[in-house]
Length: 187
Image 1 (cartoon, rainbow, N blue to C red):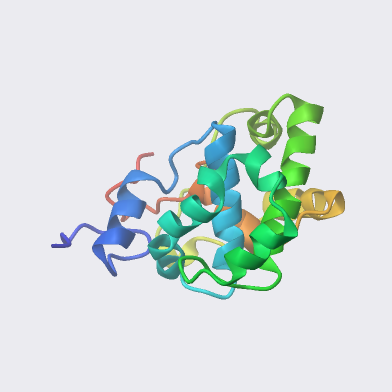
Image 2 (cartoon, rainbow, N blue to C red):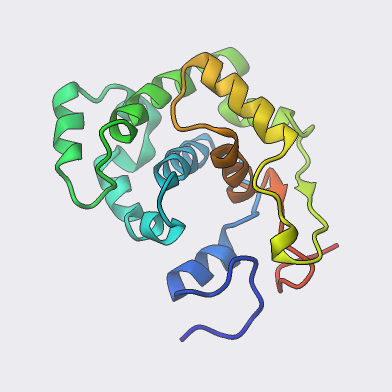
């Protein structure tokens, strides 16, 4: 049963409420989880977040629990099989894009020591705290998201547009956008 707590994006389902209450806006510094959320946010493009959450376990199974090295090593045959698997979003660009993004993610780990270091260096290691009065005030894109998106695209990543990246930054806690009326908000 879903409680009546005020949440940033509502309490559509228990799964949605649980995600909001336990993950969204919580700082993530683990590269494997940062990779998982990058792929899931890319899968989210054009779909509801609830659809992606329902398929999360399928993604973990198909993409080796988001072990970036194993995803980067997936063959074309592996990706073709993934495209037939109803446990994930079967999109002809998103599925192979997962391998592409894994390869670039590994390059960034080598260049910066970790992807976590790279992403968190954008905010000097400290989450940006939004101070929004209502959920409607929370932006869809910010200059930070635009800059990160541009860099990732330049490196060759796919499904990393500014709106996707802002949702990603919120998801992994680089930005904490719980609005003032949300039970998770803290000044």
